[in-house]
Amino acid sequence: MKEKIKSLIERHVLLWRKMPRNTKIISLLLIISLVGGISYVFADEGHEETAEIQPVQSEKVIVRTVGDVDPDGISQEGLNSFYGEVTSNDIGTVYTPREGVISSWNVSIGDAVTVGKVLGYVTVTSLSLDQQQALAEQQAAAFKARLDLETAKQISEKTKGVFGEIGDRIRGLADKQKSLFSGSSSVGSTTFATELTVLEANKSLLESKVQDFARTSLIEIYQIVGQNPAGLFADYSLQSPLSLKSVIGQGNNTLRTEYSNNLQSYAKKVKERKVTTLEVQKFLDDSVAVLSASLGSSQGQEYLDAELKIDIARLSEIQDSFRDLSNELAQATVDRSSKERERLQVDVDASKQIAELDNNYSLQILEQDKANQVAQNEAQAAELLANKLATVSSGVVPIVASRNGIIGTIEKNVGVYVTASDRIALISNINPTKLVRFTIPASWKDIKKGDTLSVNWKSEFGNVEGTLTGISTLLDAKGGYQAEVLLPKDAAFPVGASVRLIPNSSKKGIFVNRKAVVFEGINPSVWIVTEENILRKQPVTPGRQLGEYVEITSGMEKGFKYLVLLDPTLVLETGMKLDALIKAESTVEKSSPSASPSNVQDESQPHDH
Figure (cartoon, rainbow, N blue to C red):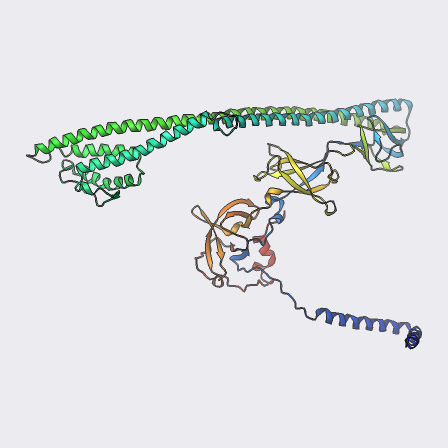
């Protein structure tokens, strides 16, 4: 059998070799087409084309689901992530001493060097002895100026560190002072907190006495002026209506009518214990006035006038007692406020100290920046003069190290032509301290010194956790705050790499499109769609805003369907059917400009900036 198959193959090979070239090409094309058709049939068998699912929407609303947008996808302007550059103060730059060709390198990457060590040479032409001496002097001056600049930068960094430590100590001292007043410190005195508690309790007790006094005086006075004194309070329930005796206030009908109208309202407040000291005082004054207007109103009833005068005298006693009670309450309020001001004064004093420190710090940094600029200008002037001499000089110029450290990179090889002040190498520590400098938008409120941020560069390097070491107190030109994150020692990210930072505290929460939150007065709510496709208004508590999205701290859960209102004038009603609201089909036609996927992105997705 094997011999037959072998013979058959040999015949077909021989036949193929005898075919003309055009025939071979046509045969190959037919075979490829046949195989492709069979593959397509088998590949397509059992599979159905899946239609792209579009969000349900009309020209006025979009139906979305909580959780269909990942908060990590919100842009930097949405305040969820930041971009910064890896920097280091432990890296020094080696510059070309003058224009020419690098003729040799005496060091390699990884070699340890010290300040002034010759790293290599640059070859130039037309250099006289006088020019060599002048060039050497200017190069030395330029080198010294660069050392001065590096020193100024180091002093500037130390200044910032020292002032930062002083600020932390002052803030810690202020917090300790506050804890002494609040009694929260384990070693602090609780005298202030105890005294404040006693004053607050005394004030509350006097406020309660005012309510009790108002009730007692009402009962006593209504027995004098009321038509049915026994029915004022029955089982502590107010009876209505309250009416006056016929003789009360007959000498002044206007006063009688006004007193009668106000009596019911006052009694209701007394029952609810919501009466104020001013209202009690007015009630007593009005009662004295209406009784005084009853004197002499009935001829031949002198005994009634005598009784009324006794009642008026009793009301005067009640007024005097209430004035004493009111004065006690007013004094208790003043005492409590005075005690509270003692603690507030501590806050004011601490704020003054911190403000003074910040002012001194700003002045010190300004002076240091000025010194840095002077040193930089001197360095540039020395280099410019050296380069000017070098343009008409020739010879071999040494490349010297500007600092102690390790040769990190050699960026220009032997034979490469370089211009004046080109960067040709880097010198760094073995493992330099690296930072990420970035900008925090002014509206971001949920990030502070000491927070941990996730930093990533490229996928093969993995993520690292960095610590936020400082945030500036002044806005920069872009309207944000400059910040720094310290990377761990083993972070492999190179200096100059652009990295992304994500605050670990910003990944939580439920977010909805900001156009979904509606307000009626001061009460926010979101229109949600029930499982039966019925609209219902859901009260919510909004939190921070992240770009196009608002965090909902209560009232919504993941999976809830809600309406994004594209038309703010749209009138919705609870119980309305979604089908009646959505006039278009559930899926949006791509040919419709108002309902295209790009427009859905514009209204309901965070914008890219």
